[in-house]
Length: 385
Image (cartoon, rainbow, N blue to C red; front, top):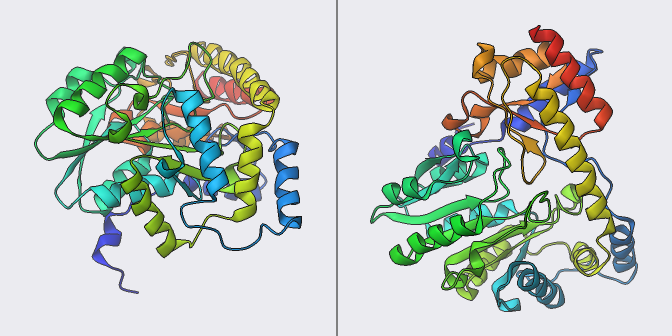
């Protein structure tokens, strides 16, 4: 099979490759502790499931508008305005299956071959993949432990050129769990406004905050039309398999993304959008319980990792990942991730799975039980002792 040349520029997610190897080891009789996949280990709240079932029984099983059901778009706009302090309307909202289509189609709609896109590194690997795929130039901005994995605005200013078309930010961040402050966002916004640069703000962990509160760059004066907010229901509502997400942006861009939706998917599943309404308008008790549980696990895994010689782990303020520095173990991150899986039976990810600046780190997801987290810590400690 001879594939198009552009396919060679398409990246992937190492997490799924590690998952496949872990599953292979399990098939061979090994017990593996899974700390590689960023997926809440909680069930979708029952009232959301009930809403989907009711919608199916009520006939929400047909095509809908490519941009999303009007009522759902209005609910999303209301939710964004309340949670971010913005003034968006339904015309700013486009509904898609998950959040990734907004990354892909937002970049495709705005970035021409040769345009530069500044993106966080280490960061979600699909950013770089999509920039490369459309022929843009990926420009990594390093996120360093010394700066709590927050983007350094001085570095950002140095990277901006007359070819910069977009800046990608992610807070709380995957893989580092770094959280941008309100002051950080104001400084980034100043750069974007001065240079007329679009900002893609990836915010799926918005409700998974342990200290302080979430801030969106869209709330900064002058940024509503320069921001693409992407969000989804996967993390905050444990709805990874439902594939429901949305973008909030300038109406012209929302219409362009809806055109991609028409060409690729026709529309997002109708009854799942009804479940989305139930999620945003219903009780948040399950989400609050999930966040409280994640916080307990966070505290335990950070304390445990810091007790292992050679590990240095910050206390995250959001998301459900830790990104410890492992340089003093004497291993590079790929080799140590391999040893954790093959020898200790603990699946995790090398920091370089998220870009070159991830070297010297591992990513662990603590979206697993306290029992399994403690088991993983014991196994890694024994392996390195």
